[in-house]
Each structure stands twice: as structure tokens, then as C-alpha cells.
Length: 151
Image 1 (tube, rainbow, N blue to C red):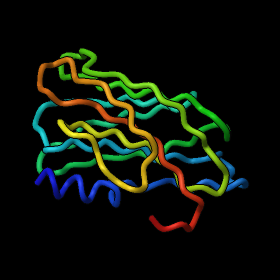
Image 2: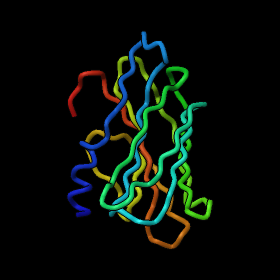
Image 3: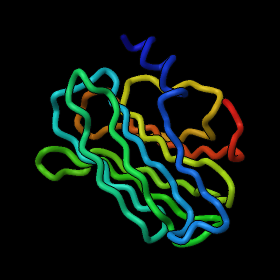
Image 4: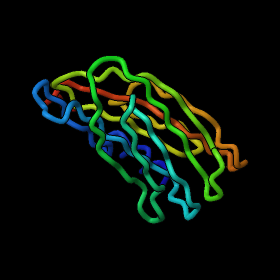
């Protein structure tokens, strides 16, 4: 199951489409994957500049949940992802930088697992171990491809 999940992960991240004329501004899709699926309640809070999203961890057998964010501007934008446990305790927090571009499909992936996600369509991965002693880590990355590119 883990191997299949890791192999499919690159294909599972659906990215938002941004165009220079989008009236709501650029979009960035945010996804949370938990591998293997868990029954432990977790919530991921993501801030992309001033835009925020909250994603509840998928409950087994589902492995992914996602949201689309409209961010206010193009360019370099700070991203902070914080994973919260069922008792409102911070399990892990990761900060990265994203370059949001017009006419790009782009997304932020958060992956909770014991092993680093693998794939050709993701940028550098930043990780933080979970503070609950599970041995899992929160892996976060940003990816962007020109609109219409296939990966």
C-alpha cells in the first residue's frame, strides 16, 4: 500500500491554474496526503501569503484531501504549513517559499508519512518530524509547471 501510494503521489496532486487575467488572482491548490491512511484526527493549516486554508486529515481508506486558494499576487510568497493534533497541539510546522507565476499550474503538497515522497513533478521537499512520537514526518513542497505541460 505504501509503495502504491508513493508511486501515485506525483499524479495525485491536482494543481490550480493561474492566468494573468484571472479576476480573483492566481490560484494555488493545496493537498494533504496521509500514508498510510489514519484514524488519528489531524488538521493542516496552510498560509500562502495572506491566503489561508484548513484541511482535515483524510480518514481511512481515503488518503488525500485538497483545497484551492486564491492568492493576492504573483511572485515570491511565504508558505507556512502547520499540522495540529486532536488536542490542538502542534505536531509539526514547515515554512517554505513559493514562486507563483501567471499561466502556471501550481500547488503545495503536504505529505504525512515515515518516508519522503518521491516524484518527478515536485520541487524541493522540506520536512519536520511529528512531535507525537509516531516516527512520521510532515513533508511539504511547492510545484509549478507552465500551463498545458504534462508531467
